[in-house]
Length: 605
Picture 1 (spheres, rainbow, N blue to C red):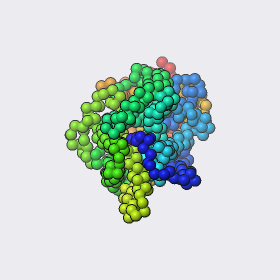
Picture 2 (cartoon, helix red, strand yellow):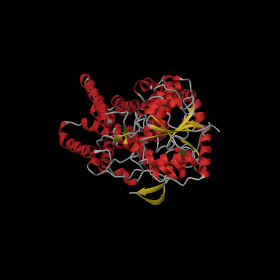
Picture 3 (cartoon, helix red, strand yellow):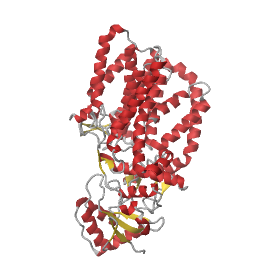
Picture 4 (tube, rainbow, N blue to C red):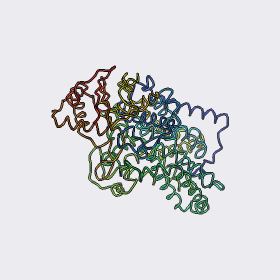
């Protein structure tokens, strides 16, 4: 993670006319790479989806539509009954991206949730590169080339490209350099109040966009600062700056606490809260061998060298490849040999931070090349602690990439300062950088055609079948693997058609084992039958008891209308619409054909 902002190289800065040109080139490169990675969606955002994670894409599109609707209609942006009716969903314990939803609400109303999602995703990637370049070039290194190498690596490292598969929270990596800048700015005299206010605002924004990322950044900064402060070369500086730093953190806590008081209460004490997470830490832990492997969405992966060691394609959180790991060790060695005692404190803190987070990312027990060794690891001890038990261990590897990027930037900066007689050595280093980094160049995300929102929704016909604020459910019910209901709802909200509620939904809520969370609500009889039919293509045996129970379930959810589209989107597998139609007809009776959907009216109790 960070180095001290005072550690700018002592080499003379580049001429101003060359500096702004270099800045422009880096910004254009960051933007071009962002469009390159997301290019598959730009053909038509409304009809294309990210192949490996269309469920999260639908969720974030819904969050954008809901957030704008909530603010414009005076509703609570942190809790809603529009999904999971009648219980509702605590969005404070989910990834609500409230700041994005509010800021981009006009764009969402203008061009729709799918296109707005794509704009934010692309901006996230580009802004991450620009923000890291700003921090590096203005505070940490003297060479614009060095800053560019470090920044572009961090912004388009395998983990960031992997999370570009629909994660608007984790791709907001531009928050990290701003938080680092805000923390170190507190050391400056006279900055305690102003700096604390700025950092408090940054913390509040980061919490609303990527709370888990904020938590990891805080842990990494705390570890880095602890190791850095305990180094003998920094103790005098730390003692002098500690009162100002502590005062600034106090102001930060007051500002962030005031802004986040209600969301934090909802998160830890509100309704529909839960402990832990809905994901298994054993599954979502980083394979040790993954650190030396190549990611799938890279030149190496395109050449057939990619692996499937990640729990899923959106969680390739390390995957640096052996050449980059060797280059990182060489960079650390070069910098250490040429560093004074003060800079060695920074290198020590960086090294400790990277190693600790790498080991923690391996999860509760070690896994090598897909096989569990049974060796208990530190995360297995920490997993029972509050807040930590809600983190996915593999994502802790996200801290390692910025450390590598900083080491690369400082190494290039030192090599640029060498006299001309070292050209051969410099050329050898350049070759090493090319061998390590070229295979990691990103390739575009995989995209595919997504089933359209039916005309029954786009034409507003649904309003004739659902009372204002009433409940409609698609078949199968909306969950992560069948997200159509939230896509339909997002369309209706963004096009100001009004509200309809849905049972179930894609969210994290209570109901998991031992008080932990789970994805979606606890299944009931009706949605279990529909899921079985759509997933397997087999019509379940229908009895008087299953008919009676299904209708009781629909009344519990207050469903007025059941809808089956001609084409149902399955995020992980194809859906058998014919089996759904036959099963629903057996349970609810003959349907009515309306526009391009089948409709069942549910009589009141």
